[in-house]
Length: 149
Image (cartoon, rainbow, N blue to C red; front, top):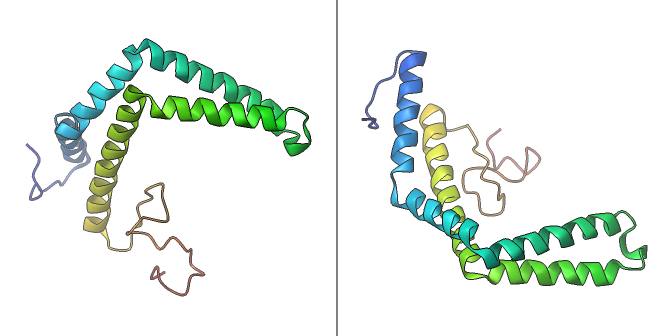
């Protein structure tokens, strides 16, 4: 089993350690909750219909978006897309899945930060959200030296 004190000296040992780590993640409560929520959403017929409707509205929006607000159906299509997204997001199985997905993403980001900073404190880990990311400078190198570049 992988521990923080595990010494890895060869690429093969590193790959074995990464397999151990992924196994620990898959056996975690957070991953199990995610897996169950995903399965629940995929088996939910109403959720499937809402997702299908949202995707249909998104295709229509993409077609109208080429012309922007000058397209005659822009307001109608934009409103229909927002309504479809709200209905989809508020559905119980979809919202449970999205919450579980965010929790799993947070865990993976935390693990990535631990791994990166154990190699070097200067390694930045993108979290996908620069406004709430504590480990990156989120302002680029022109931000006044906050990122220690």
